[in-house]
Each structure stands twice: as structure tokens, then as C-alpha cells.
Length: 297
Image (cartoon, rainbow, N blue to C red):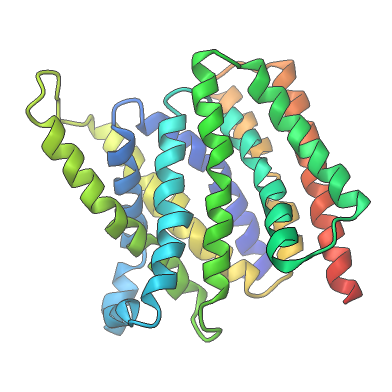
């Protein structure tokens, strides 16, 4: 599969992730769901790891700190926050609001890398913020607002994950990084899930049984929409410009919106369309400016 084909496949899976998580969290605690997603995501890579007898590589002391932060910030915490958020908000809202990651990326690049903020970048950032605010403020003080705020807080964790991923040795393969991300996500969530089970098992309203269809949806979300998606993403960005990949991947809320509305999970509202248009245009402007700056260097 070519890098571009990998990226478009990742685009589809990224768009479906909020839908799979939203369906599963109806009958599963967010912590349990995040843990199942992480374990299932790692299961995608397990046959290859067993075949190569390479499990020890994931616990090399010099790699552990960076791999842990990649998994903890890039999958564990973000999956937990999105799962919790989707108890309140809708998949389309989550996809639109997640575009604020572009703004976080600009700010961190300015603070730590001293990258120049051009007029185009500022315009793009303003459009992204306007689009997300249009959605978030429309839902203010409603039950959805809790979920919207959680989604707005989650994307900066991806940026931390990216920083630590860049510190990893260049010879590490995309398959290894994606597998490590899932493994350390599962390891970091296991004690949290275990504590939750110990605290809740004595409660009168505790029902440990999960409907089979919910469990299947959660496992597939982990296997395909998290594990395979991470693999495709790392394969794509290792062989093509990150700015180009970002322009494409950030448009996934369009598919999320269409599928969510088409399956009846939510109704289409004009403010969502307006927010989506502003956020996508802003993301496109920012990514295009980053690409031009990279070519100029």
C-alpha cells in the first residue's frame, strides 16, 4: 500500500472512531471502553510480535520513557477523554471540535521551536477557533457542553505524544511505534480499570455484563479504528510530508458528520455545518502555510 493510500485508509478509520466509541460507551464505562480499545489495538500487532519474538524490544530502558508518553498521551488519555465526552456530546461535534489541535500545534511550535506566526497562520487559527466556538458556545450550559469541553481539552495531548515520538530513534519502524503506542496505552490504563472494578463491584447498581454487540463494537473500534489506524498513520507520515498528510487527515469530520447524520445518530444543524466549514478552512490555511515554510527552508 502506498503512503497516500495508507493515509486515505487512516482518514476513513479516523472518521469512524467517534462513531464506534459513541455506540460502545452507551453500555460500557468510559474507562473500561478506553482499556478495551487499547488492548484490542495492541492485539492487532501481537501476531507479528510473537512471530519475530520481539516483545523485549518494547521494554528497552532507553526507549521506555518516550514510548510510555507516546502511549499514555497519544492513546490512553485521549481515548478516555473522548469516550467520556461521547456520553454527552455527538460524534460530529467531537470531530469538529478536535480541529482545535491545529491551534495547539501552532502555539507549541511558536513557544518551543520559535516558529514564526505569519498572517496566514493567524487567520487559519482564528477560523479554527471560530468554528469550534460556534459549536461549543451553541451548546453552552447544556448536557452536550460537558462533552464539548472535554473534546477541546484532549487534542493537546496528541501534540505531547508527537514530541516524544520525534525523540525516538530513526531506525524504529512505523509498525513498532504504533504497536508500542497501543501497548503502553493498555499498560497505563490497566491499573485504572482494575481500581474501577474493585470500587464498583460492591455497588447495588453494578452490572458487569456487557451486551455482546457492545463488546464486539468496542473490540472492533480498538482493532481497526485505533490499532490499524495508528499503523497506517505512521506509515504515511514516514514517507510523505507531514503538512500534506495533516491537510488530508484533518478533513475526516466531513465523513464523521455524513455517517452520523445518515445513520440517524444525530440531526444536522446549521451551526454544525458553519463550524465544520470554518474549522476545515482554517486547518487547510494553517497546513498550507506550514508546507510553504518547509519548502522555503
